[in-house]
Length: 254
Image 1 (cartoon, rainbow, N blue to C red):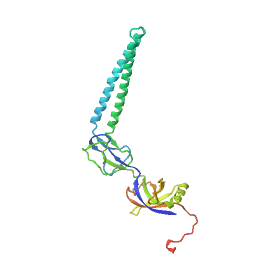
Image 2 (image 1 turned 90 degrees about the vertical axis):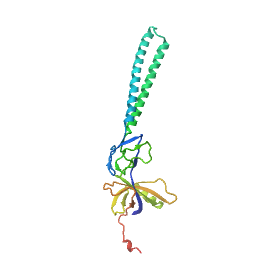
Image 3 (image 1 turned 60 degrees about the vertical axis):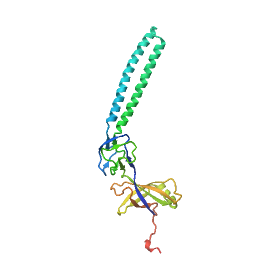
Image 4 (image 1 turned 135 degrees about the vertical axis):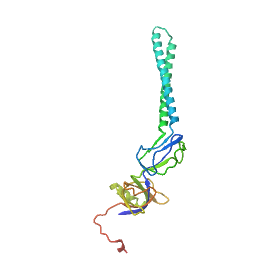
């Protein structure tokens, strides 16, 4: 028993790669339409200003660490003198507070280093997923800013890929029963006539009250790349198999 529907092919994940820092785009490291792996280099932003900020933060920490080391030595001297009442208790407490102050400054410097290192890492843009890059949205040499609406390029995951389709709400019980029995096979056929085999992944959590339909999502390995995001597909969902049934040709039924 097969249910027929019309669906739309969707990439499993679609990412618009955007800059997270401001700067000049100095390198485009991909070809349009290229297949990329997770972590592959896509682009670089001029890192000089962010490298300088990191170096400055490292130098500030080194300066405060030197002051902290000197303050700890002074505290040791004050502690030794305090045993013989060579310094007052107030002087010893003041020196201890000075050490705590420098310790806090060093901790703040480390946080500034971590922040600067993170900003520097954003100048190297890598692919967050495995997939196919689309058409370039900005050219090398342009100034990019964090949060640009257009982004640099989009990456779409094509393997596996999904097909979203709708069925009347009356078919919901049969689909749920089929899912309870195990994997539900789904066939998707594009306009070119090629068919791909997959299985039902899930149903939406609500029925559309306006249309009386419910959305379903099927997953396909798409190793041969027959299914393409945005394309329409005819979907055949096998919800049951009747054993030892008597069948007649459809044209024989009057």
